[in-house]
Length: 136
View (tube, rainbow, N blue to C red):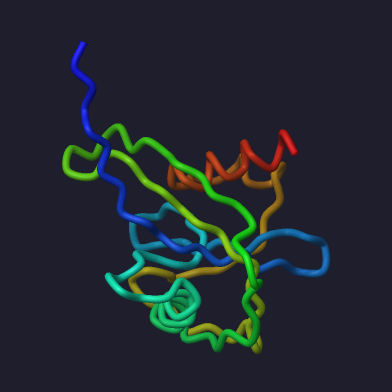
């Protein structure tokens, strides 16, 4: 049996919580919800990536990032031929405020928990993240 090589591009994701420990998701132009963050550029520090991505997607200022990642997940995007595997590293993040500016990557923001997320369409990585939360 031949084993296919997996090719992952690492994405750094921001876990932004409210006072109820609900996590923030962004609705993208595809109408799917995702955690804020994005691809880690070559030679880029994960913290710099988070600051850049949160600013690019929502025009929010990051004020704090956890020292260590909180979670790591992989997910399989069955519909993707070129990049079928995702690898996400999650850091807890705080932002100055939630006065965001919409963009193609984020035209709406909302806080969700593991129950309320069942009623929305999410990217596969978010579904894997929620699975992880429900077994912890």
